[in-house]
Image (cartoon, rainbow, N blue to C red; front, side):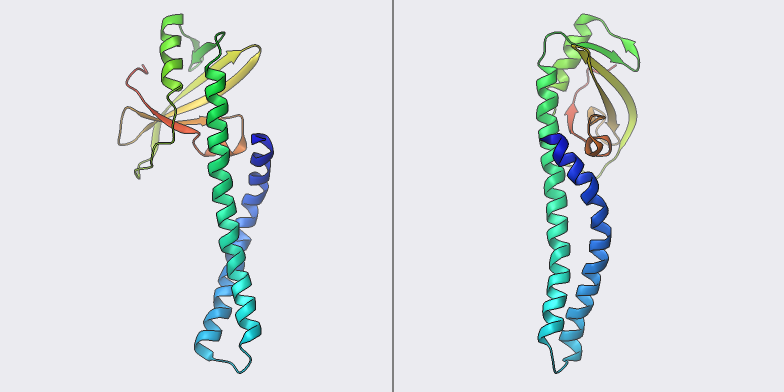
Length: 173
């Protein structure tokens, strides 16, 4: 289901920009009706309302789908992290079992932490392997809170460029 919604969102994303332009045209119609007060107001009023309304609806659907994909991907990642046969590499280096268990525990605490107007900086690549299935995560340290990491997952187009979630930890070396 996540893959289908991710594919929909990847295509729908390209509609957002023309939709915004069409919304501006709709706003122009409404502006014209309000200030020019034409004799026949009904048709431009309806046209403007529809054009502007489709923009609002497009953006609601887009952001709703984005949040849904992120939530579903986060839950899927937590399921993978709950497996017992995981092996982990950080920046290409296999890590020992004790540190691996600690990192898995920290990654399982992934959540949707409220944004605070910072940006990701320093990057760590984590590769998780289980039953011949490999997941690649990118952990990027927050620019303000040094114990906060933004997590990106390469499995879906949406989660490659939008975080799956964040963790707060001081356990990453």
